[in-house]
Image 1 (cartoon, rainbow, N blue to C red):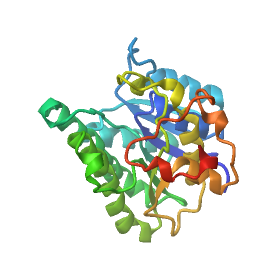
Image 2: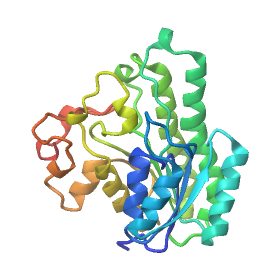
Image 3: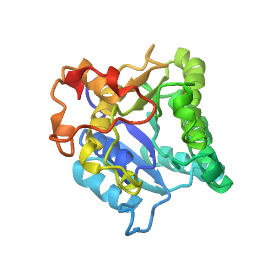
Length: 281
């Protein structure tokens, strides 16, 4: 299978950034996409709503369902999944993209922010999977793909921002558990993480991040597409890196994904960038 035509995707946090890019890539195949996100009213600081992305999906050739959904709320998630199945007749793919970030140390992390990250990241991914799995288990080629890094207990990733690392690794551990439980039942449960920082509106709000040293969301979208078209049977428990996925398909020139190809790339968190092959930079 090389296309997502006719497949139904439930993508969290798809009103902007990486989630939007994954949705639009699937839309070009003619997929059905449920956009599950909180943003239903435009925000001048963070452009994009579930409605604007729905229009983009339709224009790209897909079918869209805009769903205002806070993945911290169980009733909202279950209602959104039910609405997706009712609209499209089933569910093939869950993309756990929604995530909350706060890159501060312990003394500069309010408990309200700490709780938000745990509720959205690990708990939200678990809840969405729990709601989607009864339908995924009936699908012919079901996938759960979570935007989460390879598992790591290296203190260098924990000391600067324990709260965020705990929340993000929580998504990775949820992937580990779901893969072990449902992989043998035919569900491809995997994680995907970018080699470099990705230029999104949310990242642009973090001081010190230079957008010109980032890659665009398209590289993650193309890698996600490559994963989601794979046969699900036996393909689970992998912590994938975006350019590794594409390199395995024969891509050797990654400069089109760079915001500014003349600038050195900014490595993403949780990865040892120096170990990356030179040709993937």
